[in-house]
Image (cartoon, rainbow, N blue to C red; front, side, top):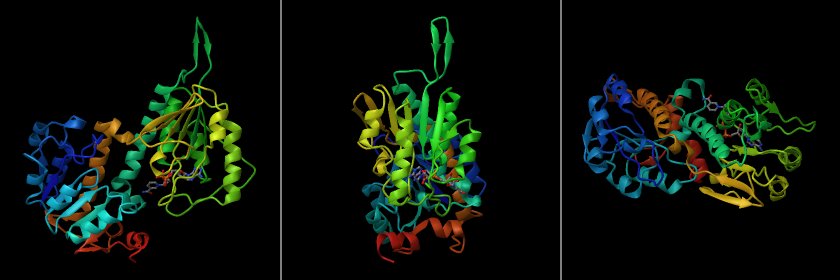
Length: 377
Ligand code: NAD
């Protein structure tokens, strides 16, 4: 069973889908790995390290794909890469199936068996394959560092001969995987942290990290299925905005992570709220790519409004490529362990993980929920 690792071609992407250490792990299930030369360079893994781990390094992606039964990548394949994928090959990567229906259709037509890593079901058994979780962990951590770096103030308290500096105040909106990591990171930096989420069960998790949960007497809860949130009603949304408005003016750094799968991100910070903040304050909006939690946030850009920096960081995990790749590679290797038995491809579509994640097979878009969302159910 030959597994090809391609380099990433998307600008700014520094991660790699498999590490030299995972090459050794995959050998145990009968997989030989071929790496396109330079695939790991941006995340500081040299060709020689892959070779030392038993992989074959070839000149380029096209050569790596020839003779591969499985192709792994971080980002979705480019048009040229789709053309180079042999018919019948298994592709494992991020594919944005809900927002890139054309790509999924092309992969189906090309006879590729595509596994969209975003579709890993949220079940306990699949946690070790869940790239959304692992990469959200990286993003939550990095968001606080980016925000702290952009602030005109310290986050920790200082008691020095030059006087006492009060700790900075951080507000985290959305306390899922990224939000909880942002809270933990801000606490490690000594900030006073408040947080809010519409899933009430996270109150305890927020408090166990030493932050306080924003309380309201109104019902602003919307727990959905599989650990995700639902959209709030209009009235609930208004109440949430009132709650945030009452706390934000006094905040130095806001990190927003609120998302609803398949929907635009909920708007949690209005222009008026930004204007109520002190100049020099910072908002880091992790939902900027899906519409933004903060008014005016732009993915990949920093906008300054009345002295408040609104940062829409693009691809934060690429800013920590070694550990982001390490976690991503572990997720991918664990998934490959579900697809390969004794060096042979064995796809069990009765299995929840295989069924939930495989979006094209046998020349077709096969996944029910994906088809529904693409309007071809
Ligand atoms: P996500 O990225 O979809 O959303 C981030 C957070 O935004 C969520 O906590 C959500 O409740 C919150 N949110 C949505 N609308 C909001 C609003 N209007 N105001 C404030 N917050 C809002 O979610 P995620 O971080 O990927 O995961 C959420 C939860 O799912 C996790 O905390 C975890 O409990 C669960 N989970 C389970 C597994 C598993 O079992 N395999 C894997 C990953 C996550």
